[in-house]
Length: 498
Image 1: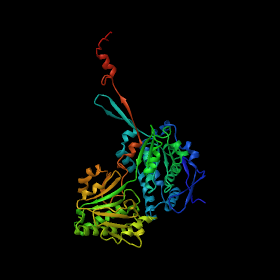
Image 2 (image 1 turned 120 degrees about the vertical axis):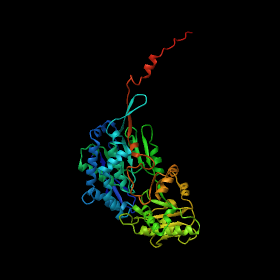
Image 3 (image 1 turned 180 degrees about the horizontal axis):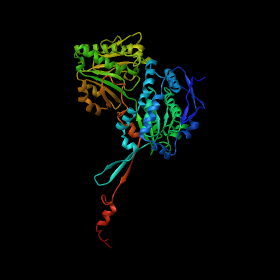
Image 4 (image 1 turned 60 degrees about the horizontal axis):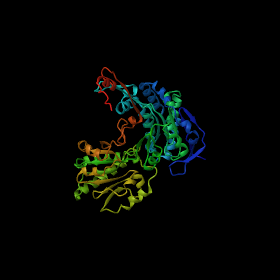
């Protein structure tokens, strides 16, 4: 028997024809049933762009009211859909149960009016969403610009439930007709939100323009119908190289692919952090939050941390002490913030165990008998990173000593997302160069998991990209003469005969 069911939600209707069975990503053999998306693919898509007109019968103020009520209804004590999503995620997510519960209790605050309004004003501008915003031009014309909704598919990640809530918020504020493809490691969060919307306001335009479905990526019976320019204008995909390459084969004129690729994050610690033992401990507590927060499951978490300690003998000693303080601080983090992942990668554990005795190369702070529970801080004894960077997770980080912190920027790539920097003066000094080398978000150390939807993401502005930006030109011939006026005013030469 399957362990749970994942309904199909199509624009205000819940379909419970549970005929297809799939496995989740827990590695425990758990399975779930869901309606066959291939059977309903032509209902999932919206081939009529004019149907979005009802989204323009409501104001942004009404959208904010709707979102606020939605957030209030996503209460873990009273909402059965939200409770079920949490219970399923306790088995399919790699977040510890205490962290996961905290996230489910807090992430609906994204829908509060003040947050939604802030995202609108900083990312798009309400003047473009509420009407046609005028801009006078040098030639006398006035252009009126409006951000219009589009028919979108969101292929979301399932590492943290925040992804689903943030996606619903973006769909609402951009007035999009949206299909959310849920992942097998978080199959119920988005549908729990959609079902709550149906119970709350079944006939509301926002409710009737959201669909939530699961299908196995690569199922051509579904994707050849959905990924057509006649049915969808935007694809917003969270995914790695293989999945993005697969989606790309469906692209053609009329479909815009917006990718939110896997990222890695880092930390730059200036020499000022090491000026005293007291300062060192204070900064170590902040670094520990960036390393261990959300069990290091998010792309914003630090993996490699660079410290300007120097690489001579006294410098390495300072780096080792700082690494020890980070490890100790990580053990003291609240369980709602960090408690260790459910499943710890066996390959990573083997790598950490293999370097425990290599004191000339690494100093490892961990409990060798319980690495999967305590995590580890690996301090390189030279200015090089460990060679198993891609495995770092589960509250395992690598601290790399440098003579000059600016050397760290040479390690940046276009996949470098969040960069925690201490002190603030260093952040201001390095941010231009760091941005050119690929860094995307710069912030004080300690704030990695408290990001804001009001900021761009992954070097782009997803909310603006989700919109269709259209122009209405107003031209007065008396002020901005057209080409025919110029032609009439000129005395044209007589044609030359043969």
